[in-house]
Length: 74
Image 1 (tube, one colour):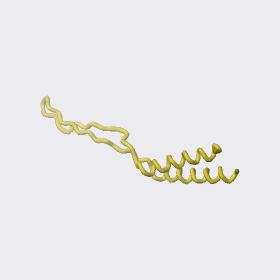
Image 2 (cartoon, helix red, strand yellow):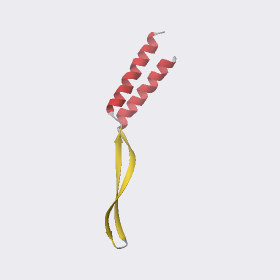
Image 3 (cartoon, rainbow, N blue to C red):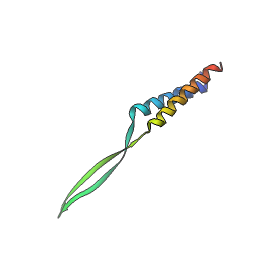
Image 4 (cartoon, helix red, strand yellow):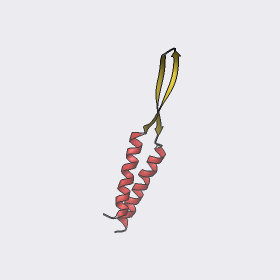
C-alpha cells in the first residue's frame, strides 16, 4: 500500500475516534466550600475538554480524500 493510502486510513481512524469519543477529562479543580474550624469541606469538579466534531469530520474527510487519491494513482 502506498504511503498516501496508509495516511488516509490513519486519518479516517482518528476521525471516527474523535467523533465517537467526543471529549476527555483534562483537569480537576478543587474548591473550598466551607471551613468550620479544623473541618474543611471541599468540592472537586472534573472539567471535560471537548474534541470538536468539526476536527473529527475534517480528519475523516481528509482521510477519505487521501485514500481515494492514493488509489487513483496506481
